Image 1 (tube, rainbow, N blue to C red):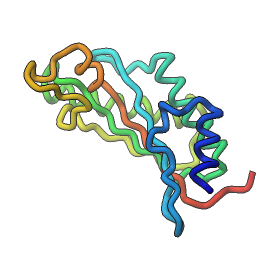
Image 2 (cartoon, helix red, strand yellow; image 1 turned 90 degrees about the vertical axis):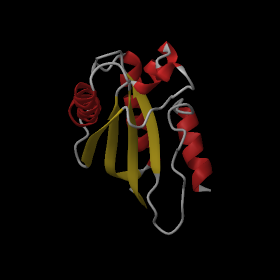
Image 3 (cartoon, rainbow, N blue to C red; image 1 turned 30 degrees about the vertical axis):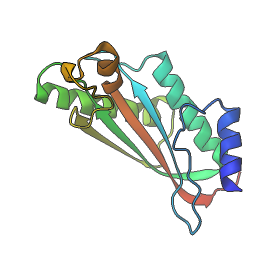
Image 4 (tube, rainbow, N blue to C red; image 1 turned 180 degrees about the vertical axis):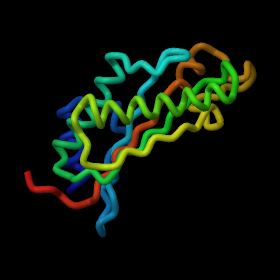
Amino acid sequence: MMKKTIRKVAAALGLAAVVLGAAQAQQGGQPHYIQGVVNFESGSTHLDREAMGIIESMIQYAKASGMRVAFISVLGHADITGEWNANDYLGSDRAVEVGSAFGEKLGITNFSIESKASNYAHPGCEPLGNGGKTKKCLAANRRAEITIVFEGQAVGR
Protein backbone atom coordinates (compact mmCIF):
# COMPACT_ATOMS: atom_id res chain seq x y z
CA MET A 1 0.00 0.00 0.00
CA MET A 2 2.76 2.45 0.97
CA LYS A 3 4.68 1.69 -2.25
CA LYS A 4 1.65 2.62 -4.37
CA THR A 5 1.17 5.91 -2.49
CA ILE A 6 4.84 6.81 -2.81
CA ARG A 7 4.84 5.99 -6.53
CA LYS A 8 1.71 8.12 -7.08
CA VAL A 9 3.35 11.08 -5.34
CA ALA A 10 6.53 10.60 -7.37
CA ALA A 11 4.58 10.36 -10.64
CA ALA A 12 2.55 13.46 -9.81
CA LEU A 13 5.78 15.39 -9.32
CA GLY A 14 7.36 13.97 -12.47
CA LEU A 15 10.01 12.09 -10.52
CA ALA A 16 9.98 8.75 -12.29
CA ALA A 17 13.54 9.24 -13.57
CA VAL A 18 14.81 10.94 -10.42
CA VAL A 19 13.56 8.58 -7.78
CA LEU A 20 14.60 5.24 -9.22
CA GLY A 21 15.25 3.73 -5.80
CA ALA A 22 12.17 5.44 -4.43
CA ALA A 23 11.27 4.55 -0.93
CA GLN A 24 11.39 0.82 -0.86
CA ALA A 25 8.62 0.83 1.71
CA GLN A 26 9.65 -1.70 4.30
CA GLN A 27 7.67 -2.73 7.33
CA GLY A 28 8.94 -2.59 10.89
CA GLY A 29 10.12 1.03 10.95
CA GLN A 30 12.95 0.56 8.48
CA PRO A 31 14.01 3.80 6.78
CA HIS A 32 12.55 4.71 3.45
CA TYR A 33 14.68 6.59 0.96
CA ILE A 34 14.80 8.33 -2.40
CA GLN A 35 17.82 8.67 -4.62
CA GLY A 36 18.83 11.05 -7.38
CA VAL A 37 21.87 11.96 -9.42
CA VAL A 38 22.98 15.37 -10.64
CA ASN A 39 25.68 15.83 -13.25
CA PHE A 40 28.36 18.49 -13.72
CA GLU A 41 30.42 19.95 -16.51
CA SER A 42 34.11 19.01 -16.59
CA GLY A 43 36.06 20.60 -13.73
CA SER A 44 32.95 22.35 -12.40
CA THR A 45 30.95 22.40 -9.18
CA HIS A 46 28.23 24.64 -10.65
CA LEU A 47 24.68 23.35 -10.29
CA ASP A 48 22.95 24.10 -13.58
CA ARG A 49 19.20 24.46 -14.09
CA GLU A 50 18.71 20.72 -14.64
CA ALA A 51 20.61 19.82 -11.46
CA MET A 52 18.66 22.35 -9.40
CA GLY A 53 15.44 20.97 -10.89
CA ILE A 54 16.36 17.48 -9.68
CA ILE A 55 17.21 18.78 -6.20
CA GLU A 56 13.98 20.79 -6.02
CA SER A 57 11.98 17.76 -7.21
CA MET A 58 13.55 15.62 -4.51
CA ILE A 59 12.63 18.21 -1.89
CA GLN A 60 9.06 18.41 -3.22
CA TYR A 61 8.85 14.62 -3.07
CA ALA A 62 10.20 14.58 0.49
CA LYS A 63 7.65 17.16 1.60
CA ALA A 64 4.76 15.46 -0.22
CA SER A 65 5.61 12.05 1.25
CA GLY A 66 4.71 13.18 4.77
CA MET A 67 7.84 11.45 6.09
CA ARG A 68 10.39 13.14 8.35
CA VAL A 69 13.85 13.45 6.79
CA ALA A 70 16.48 11.67 8.91
CA PHE A 71 19.52 12.66 6.83
CA ILE A 72 20.78 13.41 3.36
CA SER A 73 23.88 11.74 1.98
CA VAL A 74 25.70 13.23 -1.02
CA LEU A 75 28.57 11.40 -2.67
CA GLY A 76 30.57 13.47 -5.17
CA HIS A 77 32.43 11.93 -8.10
CA ALA A 78 34.83 13.06 -10.81
CA ASP A 79 35.85 11.58 -14.15
CA ILE A 80 39.32 10.20 -14.87
CA THR A 81 40.74 13.32 -16.48
CA GLY A 82 43.17 15.32 -14.35
CA GLU A 83 45.17 14.43 -11.26
CA TRP A 84 43.86 12.06 -8.60
CA ASN A 85 44.18 14.58 -5.73
CA ALA A 86 42.55 17.38 -7.70
CA ASN A 87 39.66 15.08 -8.61
CA ASP A 88 39.27 14.03 -4.99
CA TYR A 89 38.85 17.68 -4.00
CA LEU A 90 36.53 18.25 -6.96
CA GLY A 91 34.31 15.33 -5.95
CA SER A 92 34.20 16.62 -2.39
CA ASP A 93 33.41 20.17 -3.55
CA ARG A 94 30.58 18.82 -5.72
CA ALA A 95 29.11 16.98 -2.73
CA VAL A 96 29.33 20.09 -0.57
CA GLU A 97 27.70 22.22 -3.29
CA VAL A 98 24.76 19.83 -3.56
CA GLY A 99 24.44 19.63 0.24
CA SER A 100 24.47 23.43 0.39
CA ALA A 101 21.66 23.59 -2.15
CA PHE A 102 19.50 21.54 0.21
CA GLY A 103 20.56 23.41 3.32
CA GLU A 104 21.01 27.03 2.30
CA LYS A 105 19.48 27.75 -1.10
CA LEU A 106 16.26 25.87 -0.47
CA GLY A 107 15.91 26.52 3.26
CA ILE A 108 15.90 22.96 4.55
CA THR A 109 18.11 22.70 7.62
CA ASN A 110 16.45 20.46 10.22
CA PHE A 111 18.50 17.35 9.43
CA SER A 112 22.11 16.36 8.91
CA ILE A 113 23.76 16.43 5.51
CA GLU A 114 26.68 14.08 4.88
CA SER A 115 28.93 15.07 1.96
CA LYS A 116 31.72 12.75 0.79
CA ALA A 117 33.89 12.26 -2.27
CA SER A 118 34.49 9.01 -4.08
CA ASN A 119 36.75 10.41 -6.81
CA TYR A 120 36.77 8.10 -9.81
CA ALA A 121 37.32 4.96 -7.76
CA HIS A 122 33.62 4.09 -8.23
CA PRO A 123 32.76 5.04 -11.79
CA GLY A 124 29.19 5.26 -12.98
CA CYS A 125 30.44 4.22 -16.41
CA GLU A 126 33.48 2.19 -17.31
CA PRO A 127 33.37 0.87 -20.89
CA LEU A 128 35.77 -1.80 -22.00
CA GLY A 129 38.79 -0.39 -23.77
CA ASN A 130 39.35 3.34 -24.15
CA GLY A 131 39.93 3.56 -20.36
CA GLY A 132 36.51 5.10 -19.75
CA LYS A 133 37.42 8.19 -21.74
CA THR A 134 34.47 8.34 -24.14
CA LYS A 135 32.60 11.65 -23.88
CA LYS A 136 29.41 9.93 -22.74
CA CYS A 137 31.25 7.93 -20.07
CA LEU A 138 33.22 10.93 -18.79
CA ALA A 139 29.98 12.91 -18.47
CA ALA A 140 28.29 10.06 -16.56
CA ASN A 141 31.13 10.02 -14.03
CA ARG A 142 30.96 13.77 -13.27
CA ARG A 143 28.15 13.45 -10.79
CA ALA A 144 26.87 13.63 -7.25
CA GLU A 145 24.67 10.83 -5.93
CA ILE A 146 22.00 12.01 -3.49
CA THR A 147 20.13 9.85 -1.01
CA ILE A 148 17.42 11.25 1.24
CA VAL A 149 16.65 8.85 4.09
CA PHE A 150 13.38 9.16 5.97
CA GLU A 151 12.87 8.16 9.60
CA GLY A 152 10.16 5.74 8.56
CA GLN A 153 7.28 7.30 10.44
CA ALA A 154 4.68 9.46 8.81
CA VAL A 155 4.69 13.06 9.94
CA GLY A 156 1.36 14.86 10.46
CA ARG A 157 0.54 17.27 7.68
